[in-house]
Amino acid sequence: MKREDALTQKLSSIADRYREVEKLVGDPEVIKDARRYRDLMREYKRLEHIVAHQECLISLEKDLDQAEEWIAGDDEDYKALALEERPELQRKLTAAYEAAKIMLLPRDEVDDRPVMIEFRAGTGGDEAALFAGDLFRMYQKHCTDKGWTWSLVNANEGTAGGFKEVVARVEGEGVYGWLKFESGVHRVQRVPDTESQGRVHTSAATVAVLPVAESVDVDLNVSDIRRDTFRASGAGGQHVNKTESAVRLTHGPSGIVVECQDGRSQHQNYEHALTVLRTRLFERERERIAADQAQKRKSLVSTGDRSAKIRTYNFPQGRVTDHRIHFTSHALPAILGGELTPVIEALRMAEQAELLASQN
Image 1 (tube, helix red, strand yellow):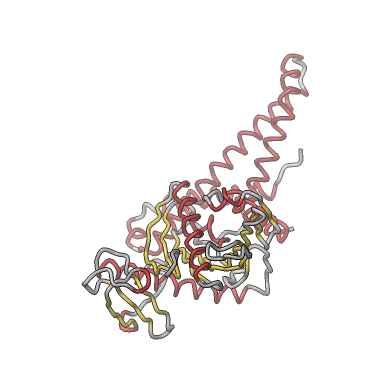
Image 2 (cartoon, helix red, strand yellow):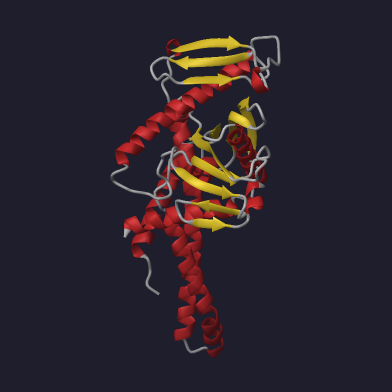
């Protein structure tokens, strides 16, 4: 078997860097620098996984070398045993090298961040708000099934149910890396409950998955923010309490407006709104950088354009289609019930294939 010399050398360099980072995260001077310590700890956790895989590769190579020695030797019992084991060792080693290639693909530095996931009703009136509610529950079920923490940040309910706009925060290992391909326009084709003629209507809702910004990511000047308070309201604008606990933040330089009213207190709503504002400013900067790089690399999976139609849920045919990779599934009820893994895995594989092809 031809050994992957370049890959082996790269893995050795990563192991050296891992040992270097391991020392740095224990340095008191590094710990004092919040941004540097945070970045090093994230790098340490990412490299730890790769170094463990490298150790597995080394072990497999040693086992295969031993088998080759036995096959070349004079002991017939050892030779027979090695001839029997060699194909499986070769298969495992090949698979391990392929897995290593994927591990070493360029990754987004915010893949391990928690996210703000925003749902907004689009075209389709009340039916669009109902569909936004369906999407909200679909992702909530999927995330909780994965053991992640899902918390409501803000909700503006539709007059007939569902949501005109709703924002949730999701926390867990690798959340953004898993959900980042879900941003875009989701379209539904179905017969609304209010449709007496049985005609199929098309409605849409937008999903935005944003990595949560940390205080060190965005230089936010409080003097640039106007803070307003008002009474929280439910569906149809009905006031649900008598105190002004809801908070609206307006960021002067960017024009971004954030409202939060689902916290238990004005202070909690203010903190939630501040996090959302910081996250949207962080995402705006990331979008600017992505636009600069757009001409360098075209990607079908990760365009960064949240106005792009990415998926259709067709109820009459029981079909879900992802238009970026031409993925089709006839398990619509299961997918809307939170079983999104087959769709997301297909998107991740397509992205990995694009990245591998770009390196050849």
